[in-house]
Image 1 (cartoon, helix red, strand yellow):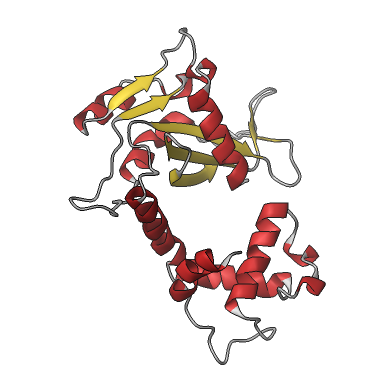
Image 2 (cartoon, helix red, strand yellow):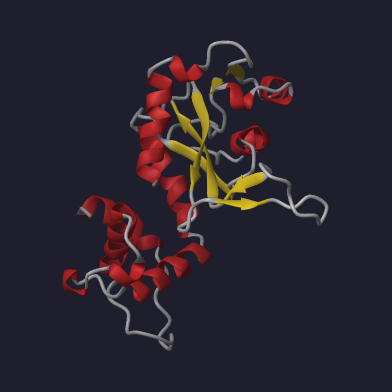
Length: 231
């Protein structure tokens, strides 16, 4: 992690409680580097190599939980988009919504019960979780929602749109909404067309049975690259 990024994140981190139980904490910067190492490499916390000097996986995980409770992620999500906007690196001409399923560690499917009765053959639902994302035209994530794996993407569209935080960075009123909203057939519904229009957003959503937005090249590639970084 370079000095420029740390200069933005460091002042947001709360100090570690003096009488906190558990392992003696390492410096916040080293703790954050350990968190990034685990997330970027997709390893379990207990597999974080101690020789890197980032502390144990348990220490890093406790640090992450403490920072999340203190609202550090929300603060950072306001600061960085504002800087991108000030530099002209946010594309408000369009936003893309999409979803991605993350399987549980054990994988597979689990049976879904209906009104307390066991499901019949074929009535199964995937385990794990699902990430619902809205990003700008350059792929910068504006809002992410995590739900159970069986939650349909269409139900989260307005929550994503309305969940975009106000982005400052330039003179004038902070901006919250893109000019257009792109989505594939999974987002085809009357509400997902009517409600964005009420917010002065042009819905560009593929209709069921028509060619899907997935085949439109760049918009799809942008959101897939963003999901790859989030994973």
